[in-house]
Length: 169
Figure 1 (cartoon, rainbow, N blue to C red):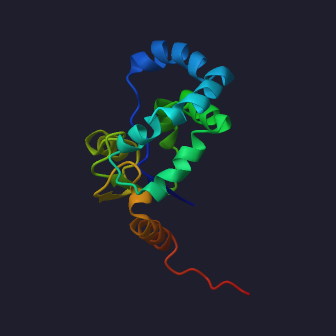
Figure 2: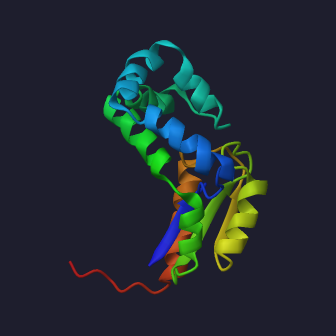
């Protein structure tokens, strides 16, 4: 087994968010009504491009196009909001101590969403044996530089299993 994380979001929001603000906001933003409203209004606002720009990733129009389609989908917005609302990063990190799995993490040096200076101490604390690859790029590094992201994944898999048995055809 191996875990490969691309800009893993292991940096928890402040505890006041988890205990007070989050539960109040989560009830509102995870409703079907809000998801429907956002799916119908966001595409008209330019907000999708602003959101993509905020990742500090340089994406072409062709790379942005799927995001414009995704944000028109109520089910995508609903699923994304529910996923973020249900994520309990502190609990996840506490449980990670039980992992016996090899880990490789890609950390993008210019990622403002999961800043390197916040992420590295967390990775060192909870995943002390992890291989860390620091690369120049933003939060969507894998989209900015898919060939380099592929190479990192490939190297991690090869390090995990350096002598794979041949596949019988």
